[in-house]
Image 1 (cartoon, rainbow, N blue to C red):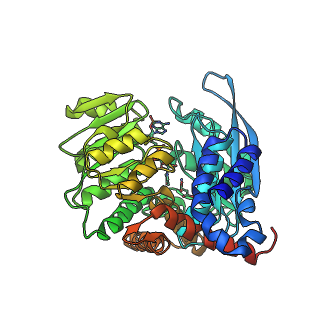
Image 2 (spheres, protein in one colour):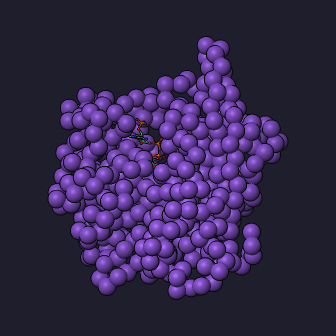
Image 3 (spheres, rainbow, N blue to C red):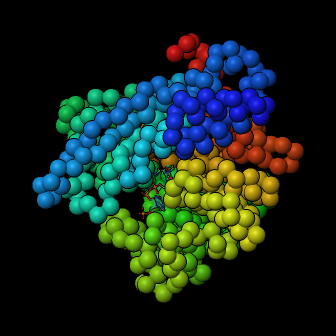
Length: 445
Ligand code: NDP
Ligand code: 2IT
C-alpha cells in the first residue's frame, strides 16, 4: 500500500512542482482512500484518483488597479475550478500576500471533499489574489475588487461557479465584488455568498463556520459522554471564524482564553466574555486593528510572534491559517491535557502533528469536516436566493446544526476503528465516495 501511495504522490509532485501545500493536502486524502480504491477496481479502472487531483479548469489573470496616490499596482488573480461532479463550483476567495497557485489548489482540493460532506449539491473551487487588504483604504479595496471582478465575472455565475469569502475577504469585499458583477452583467443573482442581509445574504452565514465548528466539537465530545460545559479553550486567529467560535463556546458554557493574529496572541485566563468579544469584533471588523490592543485594554498577557498552543487548555480551535500547529505544538497540547482539536481553519495541522493527536487518541476533527458549516450555510444562501425567499435565523441555525450532526455521523461510519474514531479517514472516505460515484455516473469528463 505504502508503495502505491508513494508512486502516486511522486507523479503528483512531478506534475505540480513547487506546490507543497497542494502535495500535503493530496497526500492526506490518498492515504485514506487508497486502501478503499484497491478493493474497488471500478475506481481504479476509471482513473478516478488521477482525475480528481487534476483541476477541471485553472484561471489566472492580471489585476491592475490604482492606489490612492494615483500609482499603478498589479496583482495576480486566480480561480481554481476543481470539480463540478456534485454541483456548481463553490468555495471562497482569499486575499493574502502568501497566495499562489499551490495554496489555492490545496484549498480547492479540500473544498471538493468538504462540500461533498455537507449533503448539499455543490462542487469545489477556490480563488483569490496575492493582494493584501491590510493597510489599504476602503477606496483602494473597492478599486481592487472592481478590477478583480471585471475579469472574474466572465467565468462565474449562479449555476456555474459561486465564490464567497475566506482570509481577507469579508462582508466589505463581497459587497464591492457583487456590485461590480451586477454592473457588468446587468443581473441580480446569487453569484456570491456571504452577501449583506438586505441584498440576498443569509442570516447566520457570518456566524456559520465558527458555530458549525463548535457544533462538530459538541458531537465529538458526546461520543465520550462529555460536553463543552466548563471546558477551557484555546482559539487562534481573531477573524471571522475565530470570533464566532468564541461566541458559540460562550453560549455553551465553555471559556475561550486565547485569540491571535499574525503578530502574536493574547492570553486572558478569566475568559473572553460577551463584552470583550464585542470589543474584538469592533477592533477587527471596523477599526482593523491588532489583537495586542485587547491585552492593553483588559490588562492581560500578550505574547509576540507566537501561537497560543503553549497555553494549558482542554480544547483547541485552530482558526487562523494552514500549518499553524507543528509537531512540537501538538506534543505540548497533549502534554497539557488537551482532549479535543476541532479545526476551524483549513489544514492548520501539519501531518506529523496529526499523528501525535491520533497516537494520543484525542478527538481530532479535520477542517474539511469540522469547518464545513460555513460553506454549508453558503449552500443554504444559494437555496434561498433561488427561491427568492429568506429563512429565519432559527431555521438556518437548526439546518446548520443538523448538517454538522450528519457530517459527524458519516465520519463515524467511515472512520470508526474499534473504539477509536479516525475522523481524517472518515471525512476523506465519505467525501471521496460521493464525488467518485458521481464522476463514474457522468462518464469520462
Ligand atoms: P479572516 O481574514 O477573517 O481572519 C484570519 C485570521 O487569521 C486573522 O486573525 C489573521 O491575522 C490570522 N492569520 C491569517 N493568516 C495568518 C498567518 N499566515 N499567520 C498568522 N495568522 C494569520 O479569515 P477567516 O476567519 O475567514 O479564515 C480563517 C481560516 O478559516 C482560514 O484557514 C480559512 O480558510 C478558514 N475557513 C474560513 C471560512 C469562512 O467562512 N470564512 C470557512 C471555512 C474555513 P492577521 O489579521 O494579522 O493577518
Ligand atoms: O473554506 C471554506 O469553506 C470557505 N472559505 C467558505 C466557502 C464558501 O463558499 O462559503
